[in-house]
Image (cartoon, rainbow, N blue to C red):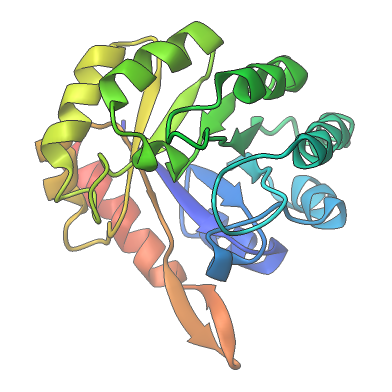
Length: 233
């Protein structure tokens, strides 16, 4: 069955997405910057309040590029340690989302290795920094060696549909050893096409709607995406 992951920015939007049937939530702050680390209070209350959906927590100290300084790495390691120590009263499947690139545009393997080791038993997803890597097939092999659990990608293209051939090739390269999550421009009207053309079994999207002057999660759109994937299955 296809896994539907919804990117959310706070606990209320997480609850909306879970109620609408989302399988997994990526919890972030500052979505306008592409997502940064949410407050520990946000993560703690989410784990206390959610009942079913898996949770992946973004660990990214700032917006902008994906080069990680020594100090920023220390912040990320401290955030991972703090997330690992939070209570999880409902036994939700919790993981973290990270990324790091070198100045040459490849994966920063040294930083990623330390982050993945620090996460310990928590599954680690590499976020769309991956889409700035030139040789993505080689990068898949590198992530396999590092022990990453999943990678979020549009195949280096503006949308998952545009990058569908690359995503399909990446998925074939990864086999069952690394999960490929298709993301980028996915909505209820095209999710079945994305699944068909990429072979992906997991999709990632925001379902934004304006509410009281701010961005919220459109529960109806989440439900339509979930229904479409179930119909596809």
